[in-house]
Amino acid sequence: MSENTEQNETLPQEEILLEAPDQRIATLELELQEMRDKWLRAEADMANLRARTKREVDDARAFAVQKFARDVAEAAENLKRGIDSLPKPVEGEAEIVTKMREGFEGIERSFVALLERNGITRQDPTGAAFDANLHQAMAEQESAEHPPGTVIQAWSQTWLLNGRLLRPGMVVVSKAPPAA
Image 1: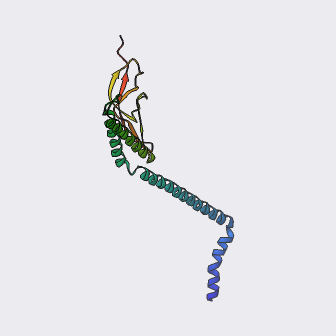
Image 2 (image 1 turned 180 degrees about the vertical axis):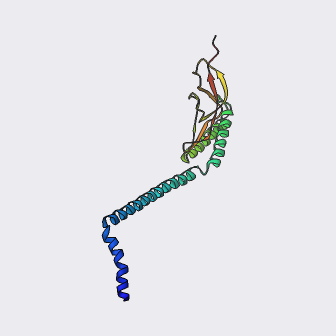
Image 3 (image 1 turned 30 degrees about the vertical axis):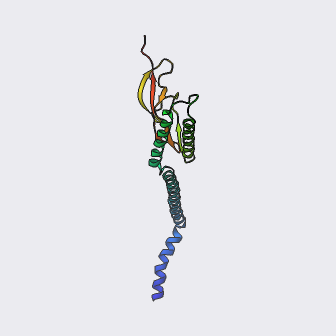
């Protein structure tokens, strides 16, 4: 009798499967499509996460020295100011003064080249159009010689670290003279 009971229990499931095989196939195909969609979305999310993480790591690597680079750029500015404050070469000046000036200029060139090899560059903003992303206007000066909004004097250079602003150039910007 127990064998007969087992057969009766399995028959309804078989009958259900036989009654609607097309419906069962459609249900399974729908489930397969849903799982495929979930899998593709998960793969896309992982690809986006990997790309974002790589970008963040690259940025961290490229700009980790930003504070140090800003301090070094300031030292380069001070070295340039020191050289600019030396008296201009004159005929008959002492040879030691000439050699010191040339030595300081050589040190400054070498120092700037070292900075450039490490992604720290400077730009002279004099003559360029004022750009609030690169320059800090310290004053405006009337000028008939320059179009309004032109940098006519740079108190300091613009410094960039791997293309990103490190220190803005402190500049004097031209403005139109008053109408006569």
